[in-house]
Image 1 (cartoon, rainbow, N blue to C red):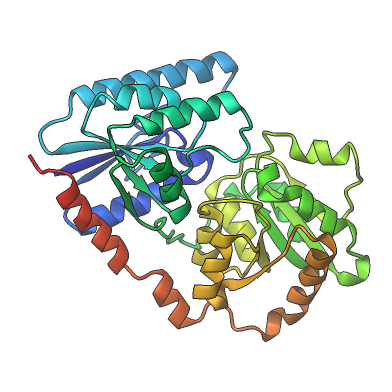
Image 2 (image 1 turned 45 degrees about the horizontal axis):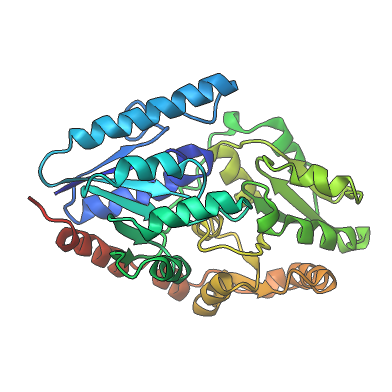
Length: 367
């Protein structure tokens, strides 16, 4: 048995970290694995072009190349080989469905059935139609996704495994850190909260900015917002309300070294999300042992209840409460015992991931 992991996103949203952990788990359990994505794995050239770089015509061209490559790869699959295709609930999934549904050797790895910031009812109907009629096996990473899939089709063959934890190496290359990142921490004696990742409305950015507005200089708190803002979320907020100096903005794609630098030098990570099924940012924060302050949505509550030393959750849609907790969390920071050995061992336990790999062996025929 051999699996190939096909992913269009890769380094765009840190999915390379997920792919690497999937790869390690499979290989550790005797399943030869190959990564097909837009970044270099084991010093090999990227197997797919980066569909997010360059002018529009280049992006479209690279996307078409990626789809045609998937067709070619599926056709050339040998006995006992399978293609695991990652899906995120965007328009990019539609051709992947059309290509993959004709082969029983394609497994869909579903991170979101419908991306949270895509409001198109037409896109939702199209994606849900594919899931309703999907003949392929599906990997899901949360009860929420499994429930949606089960409601759409009681015939779906689904296996659920938690999102693989990231083992992010804390070492970084100083030469690769941008000056805009370095300057944030120069002569900075404030308590620094970090919001990292794509800046989207569904991630509670409006709630965060509203709470930050009521902080005063005496609170000595900075809010760092770092990541691409493809939905112009910050501009939308600024059109109505001012953004105070305690909010530091780095609105661009950051490399892995800059990501590590930000997490390591910040005091805590903010996850004020309105809705989410799983979070790579949470995993990165845990890997780099940056305490978390999250919203009280079910996913985060379940994580903090199980691993209380990882941080705290609160109601972030109540802006006055959110502001008060930002202050109190900073004040209690030095008194808390974050990331206890017991919680880390529970979080990184390999048994459930090894069990998933063994399930793959029985789920996918070797011949």
